[in-house]
Length: 458
Image 1 (cartoon, one colour):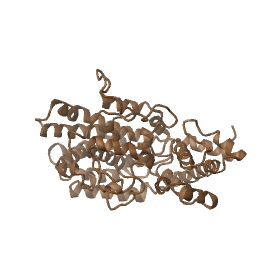
Image 2 (cartoon, rainbow, N blue to C red):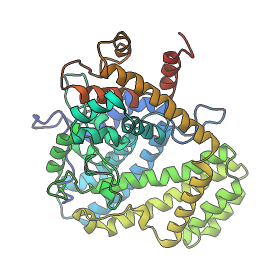
Image 3 (cartoon, helix red, strand yellow):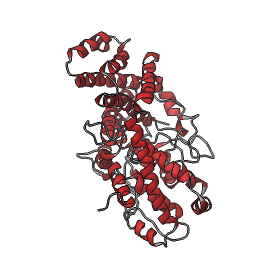
């Protein structure tokens, strides 16, 4: 891959256009950011679970606030990396330096903003609920699923993946005549595909690029064209597995920084972790730093702050600043592997040993005390039951379209999700139902579940 080819203002659905729109006020990549932040799909993230149940007496992060914070960190990472690339290749044309110095921050910010846009309600349990439902189909439904869907189509549902669904949400036109979905630039879209492979080739944890999947079979052609324009190589001749676009590592790093630090902040507000435990974890990041980042200076300011919430905010800001600089340095040190598409680890996993050990301690503590906290488990179980029930009912309607109940259920599916009763349309119908349910907010899913079960009657 080449830095010179890895960016393009070309947009999905506008391949026929020769020139891009005038950029007097907003550049192409700022337009990407604006299109995402003003979209209803992004707005719905305000009522999708990040980790802890919401809403509550204490305000914790939801998918929307998390995405905004990741975007803020991503913008800084993009600026640091872009400046480094522009400085290193100072003899390149002005357009090249202009992009990396001033446009890359907008690309990474926009990609970070959209990285969770395909996640279903109730956090990761929502993904699991969809997978479990299709894996546990029985009798006639199972027979139709096996006989009428291709292997690739089956895998898209059996291994439903929020990352792949994000790419679909951003690029699919659903029931609109206008093609290309959000019509984002190829650059921004490529930057969110953490696992550039289809469902058939994915879910092999031996490689970073195939740990999960990044696009469904329905969006394969879109990604293939995008990869061709940006010069992203296919890694295996007979499989849909591609190299990661280098910008993906920056988006991933921003997410890695935020969820580790912010989950601790939320846990403190909910009384799960003490200020002493947080300070023990967070101050350790500065043990071997010098000058402005020396631990004694950080600790002195920390103890001068009276309010515990502000103490945590102070440490959070200093850690984010520290990690941005370290991860950008690692990004440039790994330039050759990034461009060769051979880097098989995240930037976070390449931190110096003393800081990587702290990350591992945070991960272990989070698994034991945060992600298995009673409130988290309860919302996950609710997600399994609610999403499982909704899928059961709407898939029944798809499988038995002539029954009275099916006709009533199909009236509840919005027109943007196309369903038809024609032969050969089973996968399209199943994917439309999955699109509908995955796009729901937690509150909408709960409300619909209550009404359909008779718990609550309008």
